[in-house]
Amino acid sequence: MKEHLEILQGFQAETFQQDLIGWFTEEQRDLPWRINKDPYRIWVSEIMLQQTRVEAVKPFYHRFMEKFPTLEALADAHEDEVLKAWEGLGYYSRARNLHAAVKEVKETYGGKVPDTPGEIGKLKGVGPYTKGAILSIAYGVPEPAVDGNVMRVFSRILSIWDDIAKPKTRKLFEDIIREVISKENPSYFNQGLMELGALICIPKNPACLLCPVRQHCRAFHEGVQKELPVKSKAKDPVIVPLAAGILRAEDGRYVVNKRPSSGLLANMWEFPNIELQEGVSKHKQQLSYYAKEKFGLAVEVDEFVGTVQHSFTHRTWDIFVFRGKVKGEVRETDSLKLLTEEEFAEYTFSRSHRNIFEQYVVQA
DNA sequence: AACCCGTGGAC
DNA sequence: TGTCCAAGGGT
Figure 1: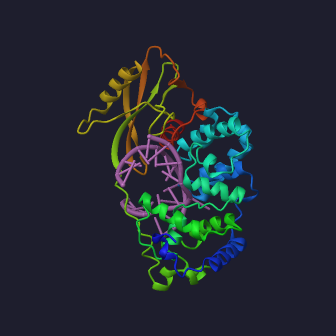
Figure 2: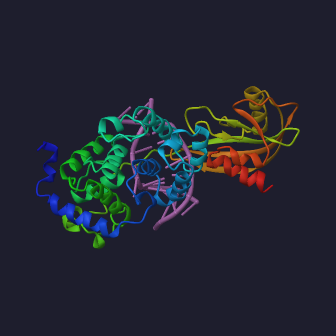
Figure 3: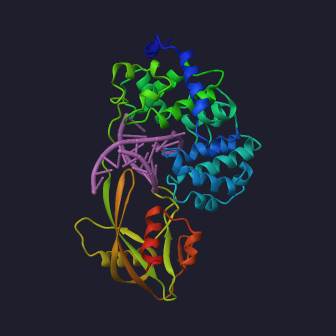
């Protein structure tokens, strides 16, 4: 046994597996991606569930599977359609990567999701966690699927005090899971760990008295379950002030532009906006100047109508919203459109700009 | 390794 | 109200 796995001395892997799998068999939630083992359905669910709660995923998953019931259907769809189905779910590169990977599977693997770590791990958007999840759940391959739940649960089970925010720590847990995973039922083993982390072994105030594996848990026996896992704090988000314009052409339609194809909210539509320079308060002039420079629009900015705040994990937008008029004709391009109010439904906006629309266009 | 990439719910 | 954070991956 490798030296860093000495922590497994005395750990009763077989009875742990039985207790965990027995519990999961009885107590697992009915979830829409558990109705069968279709690798495509499992795959879509795993991508949607990345950093996203089950309850948030459910409605998106239903709509997505109705629109793209098979791998073939998704592969044949246009990217705009896929992105639209993802609107509001966040982390939009997941949708683009999934779409590209599904096309790859259709072309290279004849539409069958690969069942080997080497092949499936090469697909866009499929990292070490998702690889193990699909292999174990859809194909019964005993690969680790180490997510935040698994690290939290096993930090407590084995009383491991490594910082789970460090990339290196995930590798340690992968090595551990490789040693203790059930070879007979890796699907229920992996899912059981995640389900336990979601329902019982939760971050704060874990329900140890309901836990099916508490007799295996060192943190519980030592009374330190609330101290684990160790997780270093993320940086504070930066506050970014923006001025955004609800700009109407002479025919009454609204100006929207498409964001760049990389970076934050890539390819999403938005109201024209500019990052305000620190210490400068002439928001109207900055917005007007920007519209002229960036889009060649002669804009007359009228009234300030309010603010919209939107927080990401790593930054916060303070958006100052203005109304304005565009003088003269507007040349539409691939990244600059004039929309009627009805046409907003067909375009993909991030939550923040969809909020501006709902708040200051629809209700106005 | 460290940083970027969304959103909404729980407390 | 602020804080944390959820079935991570790409670069």
